[in-house]
Amino acid sequence: MLLAWREIATITLTKEWQYTELTGASFFRITHTLDGQPLGTVRGAIGQSVEGIVFDRRLIGYRPGFQEGQLFIKPDEVEDRPLALQRLDDINVTWNLKVEELINLATSLPLSIDDIDNLRDLLNGKALTQHQHQISDVNGLAIALDEKVDATDLAASEQLILAQVAQKSPIGHVHTIADVTGLSELEVEKSIIISETPPLNPYLGLQWYETNSQGLIDLWQWDGSVWVSAEKTFSSNQAGTGSAQSFLPLSPNYNYRWLRWRFWLRSGRAHLSNEYALPSLRTFEGTTEVVVFTAPEPFAMPANGNAQIYEYILVNKNTITTNTENRALAIGFYRVNAVNYAVGSELVYQLVRK
Image 1 (cartoon, rainbow, N blue to C red):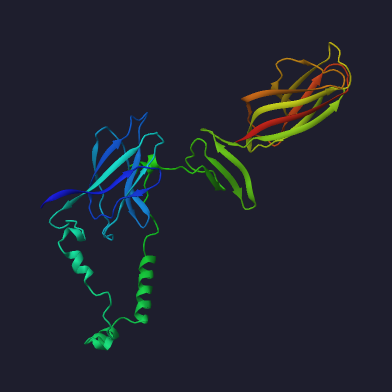
Image 2: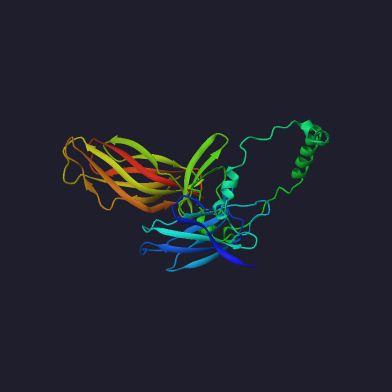
């Protein structure tokens, strides 16, 4: 046996798959070169390709002056196939690969037409016209063709194949990502899932569109420990000469996470020095009242006819748990002395799925 290496590709890696020549070999040698010193780790992928599908994918890396061997077992059903290569990192250096196949010169010596003396001249001298013969001109050809399978036989064979396929087990191979070399690094996670039930094994940032037979219920995102909804807004308007409240009914199906509270305040006349406002958020359940948030200190009422805007950032610190049907959040505005005023309130919050 006389073994030798034969080059089948020199490739500059890019984010798109690139392919070598067709090859029937199983063992390959790869030589790496870079045009500079990378600021980080360069990463690529290599695999076999059949009909545009890349399989047996695995990671490849780079070390200065590095050569590596790769073993790819050719499927029995495939005569030849190319290798596919792709770059995975974004480091600004040029990465070149030379791919060589290991061949047996006794059986796989690659020769071009020009390597054989006079072969091209002999081929050019061949007649360009095809031989013109009737079937009857060839002894026994008509009889042989008549004995070929007819359409009925083909239909029977097709039904037999379909029956055999139907008997195959519907259960596929079950593997974890870690069982497949390089898959965890190459895996591109789905960022959005649409279903009626929560996804299993969610990862940080996964978005889930919860649906039922009537359509979309809500959009959720996994924050690492719980499902939280998209931001929601509750707006209310209050006016009067004393304390006032508006109420947001709370569902026992969710917990609530308060994010921001913003309101606009206008008084009916110039304020006195002892007139002030004190906003707060409180929950009510029957006669039970719990303070969720109160402004750090009162603020003076604005002057006659003027308006001011105030905002409190709650920073996820005020999460409440709901367990009963008869619970509500009160958005309260408390002040001293009777002066006409109007206030518009906007509360931004998220639902927390139990």
